[in-house]
Image (tube, one colour):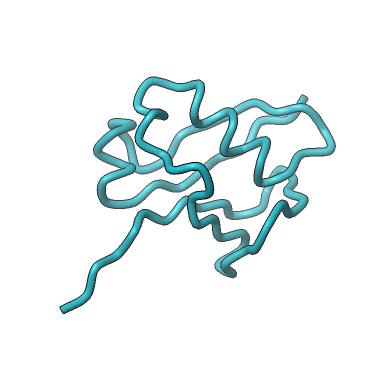
Length: 81
């Protein structure tokens, strides 16, 4: 098992009550594991089926391997105007 820090922004930070949360996932871990662990936390119901995830400041597509020490962020939908 490994513990990962996940950054949250805007409505996701509001739902989880924090800008950063810690999740524990089995190794080897993927972004899907992280999202699943987030959904199990209070506030996790707000996450869509496939939220936008960034690893080390790069948006990911699909399921990507992650490890301790990487910057993982879940990005809420953004509206422009």
